[in-house]
Length: 145
Image (cartoon, rainbow, N blue to C red; front, side, top):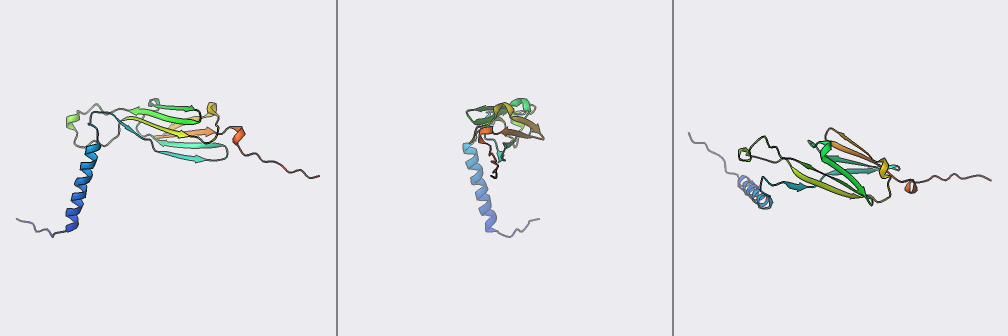
């Protein structure tokens, strides 16, 4: 039995765009077995005492994350490994990231590097970076008389 489908010009146009997107992505992609390098998404907040940095690192062991601070540049880096339990030839779709990641963040004021706290919870790395006393706002009391 034949099926009658109403012609829709947008369907063909969308199909063309999908093909173009796949072609563009594939031309820039590395070979599937090569590790990739990717950026790290950060949220940075500030209060009068500290900077609060949150980084999404789902599925990454805290042992595979390295945090350094040098000359007011915070660096978060690490590596995720590809799933070796499945042969490359068996994959039909492979979108999960693996390889190295790194992110540098220049802090605009001096901080107390010895007091930085790092916590890992539910795939989110939380950093509390206290500001140096010299840069914290100081309240000056007004004396009468």
